[in-house]
Amino acid sequence: MFIDLAKVRVVAGTGGSGCTSFRREWREPMGGPDGGDGGRGGDIIVRGDSNLATLLDYTYRDKWEAERGEHGMGSNKTGRSGESITLPVPLGTIIRDSDSGEILGEVVENGEEIVIAKGGRGGKGNSFFQTATHQAPREWQPGEEGQVRNLELELKLIADVGLVGQPNAGKSTLLSVISAARPKIADYPFTTLQPNLGVVQLSDHRTFVVADIPGIIEGAHEGKGLGLKFLRHIERTRILAFLIPIDAMDWQDEYDKLRREIRNYSPELAERPHCVVFTKLDLMGEEYTPEIQTEGAFSVVSISAAARQGVDQFKDAIWRRLLELRKAA
Image 1 (spheres, rainbow, N blue to C red):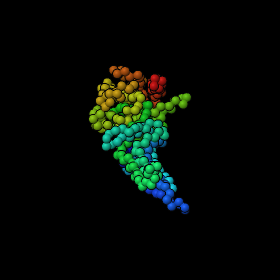
Image 2: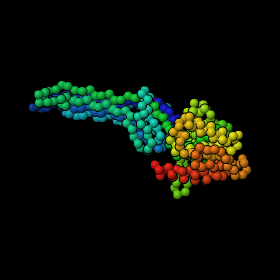
Image 3: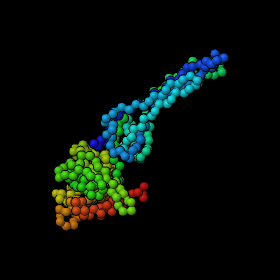
Image 4: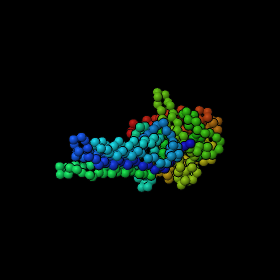
């Protein structure tokens, strides 16, 4: 099951309290203070894991609590620090404080760690307060409480190319042909109910990642259809590929609608490089590329994913543009 939004409560460990103790050894009944400090509480850490693709684990458990630090002991023994808890999340996860709305960080690399709740500091024992004029202190400090946060984890897939089109535009079929991904394919609208990722492999070990986004209908930016639930997954893509079935009633209107929905959702996203892909070319029985007015598309191609026609031309156009973007970065 694909889960891209989860809410959890995290509680960092409380620090251990300091100890009040005095040395009581043979022939030294009035020894000085030897109360140790308390240990530090454990942190809550978020770590990126490239093996994960969903936040499903956080729907089964919504509270995570780190270990508290041990109290200090006599003989100047410091209490053991509490164990930290590490929460593995998929790459592309944004961590937000749900109470304040503050973004605490986002994980985009494998192994990247973010401390989202710090454990409390351990309290000082009475030996810390000893001075030349205060040789038998009985003061001690309690441990500090660890941070408590209510978090919202939001996953935004990381891909080089986002396939955008209305339902049944052929996005899933294209993804299944150019990669090893196996999305659900059927002849009815909204077959794709969750985003799918596929890695496209070219010669010479060249690869790029493609995301198949569920069908976008008019009003998607307002939440219609699957709307806002999945539009956010194309925010991280470098290139958008607008897929238009060649048997559409009005190619220009189809293109304009898709561009308008993206622009209404995010003006910044609408400025990303894009290409136009006419799908289902096999329905025409011949090679044909409709002429439409595009807003700076770097390529317009016609393909038939089922017949493997024009697919290599599409992949080459994408790769050339990606190479330009990577060199400019």
